[in-house]
Length: 265
Length: 330
Image (cartoon, rainbow over all chains, first blue to last red; front, side):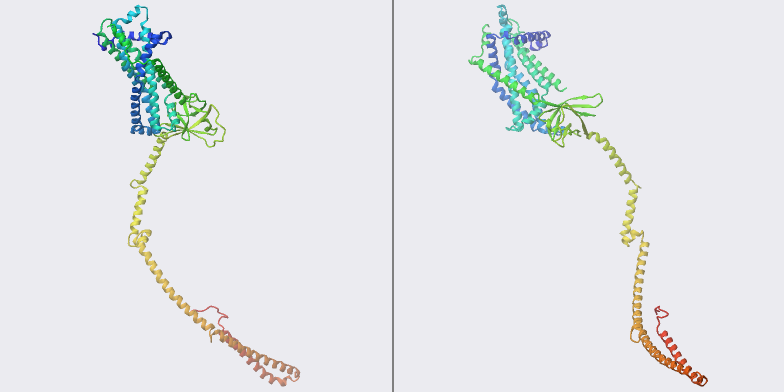
């Protein structure tokens, strides 16, 4: 019986993951992958991963945003830092809010949320298909399981991460503005200046790249690890699913740490 | 077992029919939001604005970083894009100013770089007259640098100098110390028996002498007062004797009157002499006869002349100012 830990440490498993990732990404980007059946699977997956959880997720991210905004807005530490830097407190606190929420916390939490909400389910689904031999059967019938079953799910997971991230980032930016300046548009010039100050081209590209990598990781890793289950051996399913989730967390963590290192070190 | 994948694949019993539309809307909305965010950030970065370039030249760009604001009247009007080290060793601060804000910069605008004790550096623009010609694109301007941190060593050196001076002034046996000791002695004397006088003159003895001298001067003044009173009475007496009734002047006036009468008498006698001389002429022939008469007459004339002489002597005696005009004080 293979445990998740063992699978994680297996170099071949990572090798396979990267190979699968490359193939699947290419397949996901080619329009020919999306037949009517594939589209139906993708739409259903997006519906389950993004649409159904949207209100709950937005409420959660709004709550988190408001809490963090209020902490930073009233922080004595931020005030003294602003004084030491010779800047206004609003400037400093707003920049911190945007850095913490928009650049780091929301993309990370969205990726983790989608991973928990769908990654486990997709992994289990694929592992089960693998155990049942369904994928090989289809392959044998001349149909490409990659195109029919996997690519739509990959694209759907990536698009879900993208949608949820952009919604909650927009919501956090709106909440940050209203917390600092109220309902009026009086602070818009200042807000725009701070945003322009913060998001230089590297940061912006870095953020987009990070979101893309998170989406890819969330879509690919559980699925690819689900394929590690062995045909006819039901007991390999939990190990494969668990390994998929753990790999996913590891990869998300590595991406986050790398992005922080590139930005600040 | 075979049923499982199917059940999981269709494990959405409440999937609504217009699923495609909903998901399409969701994706369209997400893409719109994402594009709007990116456009907003690019707009905030000034990607869609026209810029004027400006290079500030300084010998030390320490504290300046890309992204820093250039402020005018406290408002950010431009942003540092990059820094460069010029071949001549100066530092170039390349700034982009949106065309909207470029009107605040004129040919005469002065740029300053202030590095405070705490906080980052600040780039500021000062325009004295907005009527001056506008700053041309890609202009190069020097930047005046005010660095608090640089001033500190100088200030410390000056301060140490000043403190050393103070130290020298206040040490034991310094001139200030001695002056203060002298001052203490003087004020001690001033507080003594003879007060300020003792302090100024430097001792009790001297002060006593001065006081004695003053006392003597006072006595002298009192006696002088008596003298002047006596003098006053003497003068009054003199006045009375000279000008008062029976005084010298009146006596003199009387004597003059007498002299006048005597002179009149002398005049009459001389007339008689004249007639007698005429007679004498007439009787020249018998002069010898008349000699006895002449002798008697001459004796008479001589007597008269003696009287005149005596009178004049008396006048002289009684008119004391004639010869000796000084008033003899008793």
